[in-house]
Length: 97
Image (cartoon, rainbow, N blue to C red):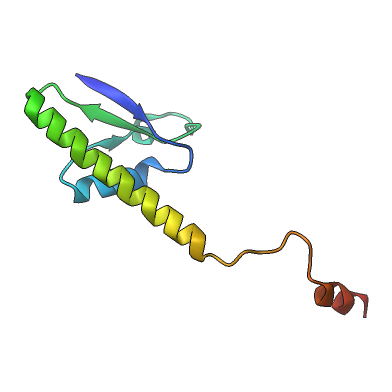
């Protein structure tokens, strides 16, 4: 048995599945099975061969993997230089010459 776990728009299924593997959880990116691009990332989660305790432990490890990817993205966004939407005054003056 399987279920689909849809991800927040800012996360890709490939980065989350890679992080999940680092946390010893095997999930498959749903995009692997899609005929057309998906509107957002999703994971295919199998659970039929596991008891309740194993499923709970796997869910906790998957949550840690999601948290790790989210924190990495947040840290990268904080350290990216911000490009102004309006050119600096010097840039506008330089273009006039």
